[in-house]
Image (cartoon, rainbow, N blue to C red; front, side):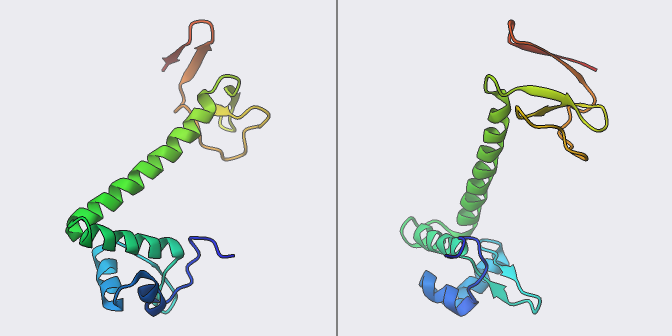
Length: 145
């Protein structure tokens, strides 16, 4: 089974799967609404995720009456929400009780790592050179610069 982000569909197949004309896909690519990956010969290759996004663009346009500029803005905001959600989950893993472990990184900076892990060479999750004092009884964090 292929991954949802495997770039395998040529434009004619992607257009058929999305229920659109290939020229519409070309225009969406030019506008930056749905931008597939390119082959070395500059041919477009669409993933299943791209095709689902094309269907969503069509739904927003036809059913909701949203113009292309609005659709682009909606898609950009959805991507930003997804990126921020992933960042929150990443940060939450360090904030959960029992998961906060600090160590010295290769450059001497204090970095947070998961319990049972060591800092890897070249790891750049530092506090920017700050010394962090963490007191669990007061639940405060004081940064000295």
